Picture 1 (tube, chains in turn yellow, orange):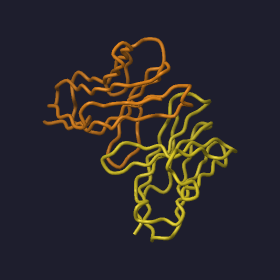
Picture 2: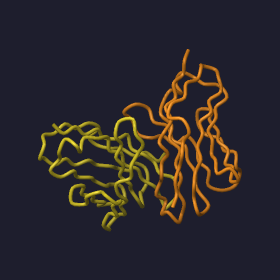
Picture 3: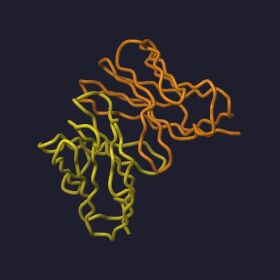
Length: 115
Length: 114
């Protein structure tokens, strides 16, 4: 139980294009979903927190117009990297919890490479 | 405010030897503490967690951790390392007051020598 999927697992795009990453909770309803970014050999940095049907809450320093988050349902959240640039290349990981519990379940991550 | 410090970014152990990964936290409210493992190019898998109750918690793959409030620690141990334990390990803290937002330590990479 508590499985979270992400799609795509890897994406390569040209600079200036937009990329959408999906995060799905497969066997539970996620009250909250979280988006993280991880640079090589570093820890996870929380980007934003999203609740179904409401606007995402972004962490300080994260551009909300650059990283658009839509939490359309209790099982799906999307992260769109708009006008991507090479410095946006990173490993993006989502997580979800259920019933406002403390445990987060993580997706497998999406590796983004912007050329 | 909450924070996590993991002592040692790299740990090397021999197969069959004790694995000890150190984690100290800071939290102004009762914490929820977690250990996650990450294999290359993968997401995080929950090893174990402490919320309330028994301070010695057992997790998957033979790992356990003990919550010591007086030492603000949550060290992770495994009696006998296996080659498959080679991975990155993250300690994390949250609380209800923090809205269940996790704060991660810097991670510890474990290398297991045959």
